[in-house]
Image (tube, rainbow, N blue to C red; front, side, top):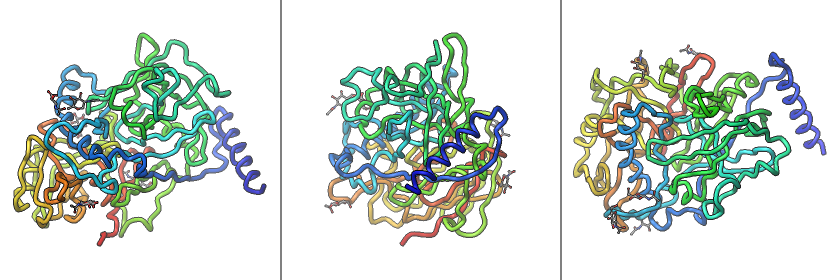
Length: 423
Ligand SMILES: *[C@@H]1O[C@H](CO)[C@@H](O)[C@H](O)[C@H]1NC(C)=O
Ligand SMILES: *[C@@H]1O[C@H](CO)[C@@H](O)[C@H](O)[C@H]1NC(C)=O
Ligand SMILES: *[C@@H]1O[C@H](CO)[C@@H](O)[C@H](O)[C@H]1NC(C)=O
Ligand SMILES: *[C@@H]1O[C@H](CO)[C@@H](O)[C@H](O)[C@H]1NC(C)=O
Ligand SMILES: *[C@@H]1O[C@H](CO)[C@@H](O)[C@H](O)[C@H]1NC(C)=O
């Protein structure tokens, strides 16, 4: 009962805050959302699919990227686990702990709970819905706007997003009360899918995405022109103790997203702050140095990099990947598998990548392997891969497992802290 009252009070307070025209910042707060792994019962990884999907996603990156850059419609960018096909020779002995495709967090929309992928590499909050054909929603939780007392249609508004791996979604748009970690945004733009790519259909663990990049990347239009809607983070920022969210991922990819607070017990030493170049809409920064072991290499022509929780791997410029794997005995670039592989018993050096001018983010050698590539577990696929000249380095989960990262929307910066080493 006491708990209920507290919840009610907090909800009321939140409602008051949101009702006020100029946010009356009475009570600031922070909240946590778990990011959990696919349970084995759900994990398509068990049939060898998950890691292959990721491999293929990596493969698909180049095409998706270049095509989108050419047409100037780069709207979002992710390498998502989205293709259950195990075509090719890369039969992966999947270990759900290592390879599980997606990491999801529960989100309440108008009283309906869906499992959404928190993605700092895009800016649309879209959901599987009853507007999709029934056969596309098998195995998914779907949002039924007609059953939400708080849904409001945005007349004429539409969205269409395509990700770097070729997947995508489209549909109509409304607003609803969206609650994450107990904190509600009353009129959050919710994009209601009526079309999704086959890869999302097959990803029965994912009911949609919560985009956490800058709102300018949001794809909503009113039928004639772009009308970007604010992300959940942009909407909730004023209610938070600090205008941040943090990604704290464990080596198995589970972890916690925390909004409003930086938990200094989760990393060693001082946090390093790096200003981001938000002009592209991504959490982007220069990364013109890398190190293999302790050997620092200046790389003035490097592509800029983005911090992307929606990507599994650390995708570096091709020559950086080559430099790294030149130090791994037996490593080779295998076109069929779609990336660098090596004998699983090879000694892997640490890799560090520059985050802005002042920080090197280190990923220990024992956290580099992403998956095994054969049933006998003798050949491994690296969590560090080349971007095939895509013109952007994409730092995903491989980095977040070793680095605690704070995304600061207030002064548009990223905070990095090294996580304690794992045995
Ligand atoms: C693999 O993909 C290729 C081209 O997409 C196709 O021609 C081939 O039949 C596929 N093989 C399998 C085993 O699915
Ligand atoms: C999966 O990937 C393969 C190879 O890239 C492609 O041929 C196939 O169309 C994809 N399937 C889906 C469902 O996306
Ligand atoms: C951004 O804010 C944090 C504190 O929230 C501060 O420590 C940091 O120095 C600021 N960074 C920049 C680049 O202004
Ligand atoms: C910021 O990013 C844009 C777009 O990616 C790039 O063209 C520009 O050079 C970057 N600016 C700085 C100062 O790095
Ligand atoms: C390969 O690794 C997985 C995951 O650790 C394990 O379940 C499996 O038994 C291993 N296979 C062999 C042949 O050692």
